Length: 333
Image (cartoon, rainbow, N blue to C red; front, side, top):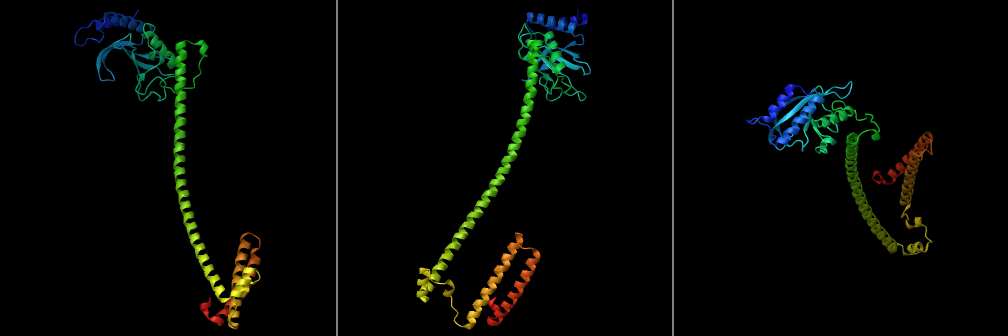
């Protein structure tokens, strides 16, 4: 039997009719509350009974009975301080259960049944149906789920008995816990994937800007090349017209494939002939130096051979340009 002070407190609290009267109005309801509370403190003597004002989430206030005690669920784990408020519509409505925590024993944030505020919800509370469900059985259910998943100790990988060896409610509790942790892992992976996709999207936007800039640059270069081609075609037309006017016979031979292209340009005197020869030789020297540069770059010619050839070509070019200066003056270069 429960201690007589507990019985006296329950009877006095339920029979009070002053302004501090509890929010339980039906006599049959009070009988169930008395019976269930006495059963609770008989099975769990660590609980003590009190009465106070309870604030619902919608702002309404009611005067309710509540039980406070500690649950010892497993060895080497801290006991769990618990407060159970008896709803004003109990037993048709389930009690409100809160785990009391402090800075030394905080509730781990990933617990499937206990919110960081301490509010507790479990399949037993969510599927509460009277008379199948009652206060003592609720606390017994809390002992089972907390022994597998302690609110102060993070242990989601605890080993479980095979489902065929446990009750339907216990199997539902364990399944809810495993689904909760699986959901947390999935959400974490999804957030990481979303962050990776967001970073990839930013990178793709940057690459799109770069590609757009490259396309615009290529389009600008294409237009420039088109203008250059048109200019070259115009210059070619001018040259063909000049040749047609100044040397019709040579042009005819050219069209018939019989003309040597070098014959299209004839020196008017000996100095002009020398000038053409010297300029051609200078251009040939420049082409040779360029070819040597390419050969060195591709590893075809060794660097020593390259230096010898360049020195020889530079010496020849120096004498050629000296002759050109004497022939036409510095402006020719």
